[in-house]
Image 1: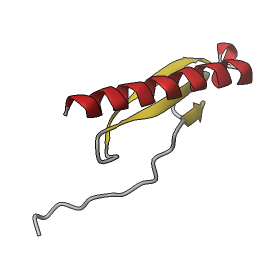
Image 2: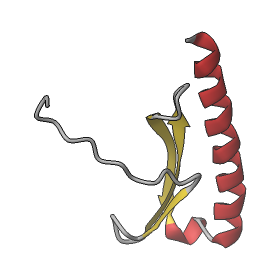
Image 3: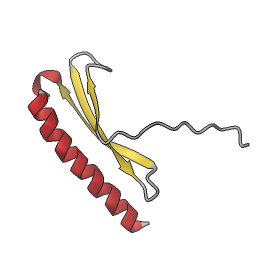
Image 4: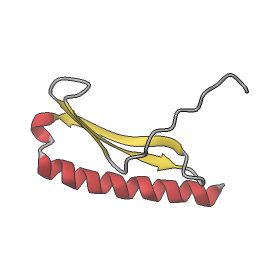
Amino acid sequence: GSGTMAMVFPIKPLATSLEETYPGVAGLAVPVLGEDGVPLGSIAVAAPILRMNQEARTRIGKMLTASGRKLSASLRSVS
């Protein structure tokens, strides 16, 4: 082969981080997918955990998910 190994991970519709990377910070991210479902990138939001309570995470998560789907669809229509 070419000497490279592909790593396959399940693609989550919404990834959440609660102080996993930085103390006091919460983050949410969604994938941006290409035509064949391969991830092209992501859209993410990070904020102090004090401002990212469950209600805020739910609200922001819904907006991010809708934005990720819309961007993915837009990119597929261009290719």
